[in-house]
Amino acid sequence: MMPTQKNVFSPQSESPVVVVLSGSMEPAFQRGDILFLNNAVEEVGIGDVVVFKIRDRDIPIVHRILKVHEDTNGHVELLTKGDNNRVDDRGLYAPGQLWLEREDILGKAVGTLRYVGMVTIALNDYPVLKYVLVGMMGLFVLTSKEG
Image (tube, rainbow, N blue to C red; front, side):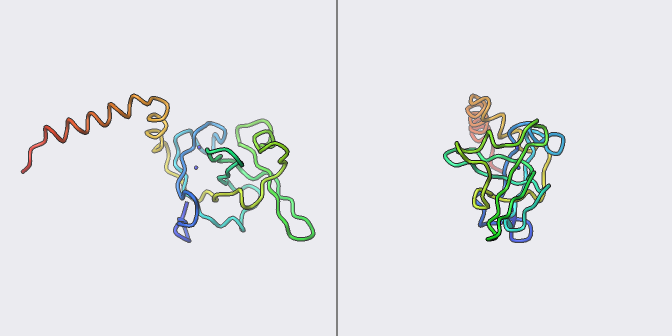
């Protein structure tokens, strides 16, 4: 719904932290879990949970690598699938795309914080909450007393 600092978090990845937005990876990851990524995309293989971006789409997807195809020249292609989905992700890929390339992978999941991202999901699902939160913070600032 999911980063690194070379060993664990990677400043080179587009986003070293992602929020799981759907239930497609249940039971491994729940909606609202935060995933930490590393950018060791050369080391990903079958069974790894990766975050990838589809061409011309803004929202990254968190799914598991189902198959790896390597040709005689060493060119690697990947097929992914959500753990809770019945079919692979070919229907999600760009038109005519049957495999992911390594450059489509933003990172490999290396850690998680359960449900912490629900705040982000709630703020996106219910935009009025943003205004309520800002209003409450403003009220707190106005009514607080300095020591």
